Length: 304
Image (cartoon, rainbow, N blue to C red; front, top):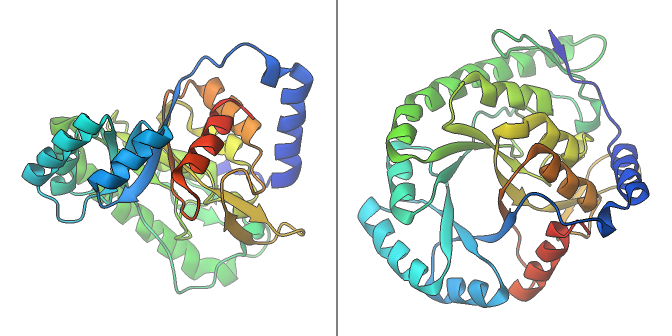
């Protein structure tokens, strides 16, 4: 049995940040890892990519939709002329999505695994999960009596089984196309703590299945993002950049622009370095000019 201990988000983040300051990390030598700047844009458009290139971005993530490999190849041609890399494809978890991603020049697709809804479930701050290492099935989700959440546990276990079967069928296509299937943590009440999410990704025992970690999505569960990053380690394949501001009582909150929320970004940057993550940081946000998003991402990459 594996137990995921409940950790206080704010205390954990503050402690990590204090450690960085004490060590003088922000004034130390450059980080060992290289992080690249990208933006999620949905539909690929030339004027959008030119504006992002001018703002200092190196890549974009697009949505697959019904794009054929032939159409993706044509888009790749003008993107490369602009100097922008299409590095990932959202919604690409299908044979066509993987083949379109390869034609785009991407080496990863974002795929959302299972999900649970319509049943009683704990509040985000109540989770205290145990699961079976052999099957990935939850055995409890809170301390004490779990009868209230039996339907959630059963639905989660069915979703785990079906999600794993779907991904297994895609692995041969991923190997053929050399495109990684990156599984993202989203707001679908599934694998809400790092150990169970890591178990799912590791269960495939394939270099073609990795984690796509959205830094802001699971802040509400009160495990600091840097703990998720360290849990994933070499299984970390892609990263979405968002921020989330917790309410004063740490119960719930709201999404905000990067660096405006509760995430301690120096601790997150240090975690990327500690696990050896060299890869893309893709902003999934809107409402600010591209140069401002670029500046904020520069500060995150610098460990500030």
